[in-house]
Amino acid sequence: MTPILAIGISVLLHVSWNLLTRRTPSEANFLWWIVGLYVLLFAPFTLLEFLHHASQSPVLYLCVLISGTTNGLYFLALRAAYHQAPASAVYPMVRSSPLLIAIVETTVFGHSFPLISWAAILLAAVGLWLIATSSHDGISRFSKAWPYALFAAAMTVIYSLSDKVAASNMHGINSAMGYVCANFAISWIFLSLEQKWRTQQWIPTKTPTTIALSIGTIGVGTAYALVIFAMHWLPAAYAVTLTNAGIVFTVLLGVLWLKEKVGWRKRVAGATFVVSGLIVIGIYG
Image 1: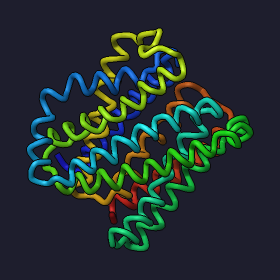
Image 2 (image 1 turned 180 degrees about the vertical axis):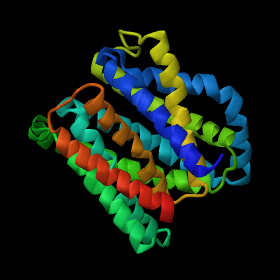
Image 3 (image 1 turned 90 degrees about the horizontal axis):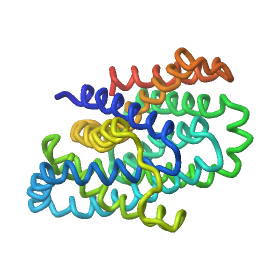
Image 4 (image 1 turned 120 degrees about the vertical axis):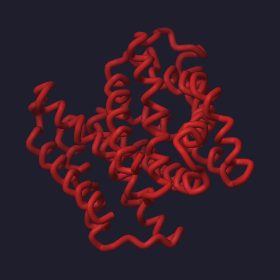
């Protein structure tokens, strides 16, 4: 499997479980279910291979601890931001993190990006901001959400760079999925504590449909593992930027299928910027 193919499959899976998250009642706490179920279902088949690689490269244990913790904090910050502003305004801003990732990869890890790649990453970030600001209602409410969104973006930078280090010490999709299982086990603790704090109950009062649970459980972790698999060859900034194709796909679905007319010109313009950046990275990255 090539890195670009892995990213492509990841995008489709990511879009599917994200759309299901938005269509599931908040009382069901969809993410709590699918993250926990992913660990239960896939750990027995993938965790041993990851542990084998970790025994040879102990840095993987540190990567799991860092990524699991920051992923858990990311989930909580994103959920808090969604309570203050629409996901259509919050999520694109959070996903503009590749610019920060590229800066850290350059200054800390010594990775060198050609000028055209910097331009492509910046162009994609501008496109995401156009998408995020296409709704006047979203912007008016974003003033309360931006601290949470900024924190979520910072967590994305940290776990993406940690995942890049992990990817360099693993081989194969099974090992990447085992790494995600260990990662998600930590993140699920954060989701459970938040569930208990918010509702005074450990288990959500509602259960998502069987179909939603099946698609979400397979998609949430497999999409993540495929990105880590691709990071074995790609810089973290490239991999995360390319996964933003899912946002473009969601925007186009909203305009063409769901007939979302408010701010559609700005959203289409933003999607065009993002696609242009992705094409440049795909060709020259």
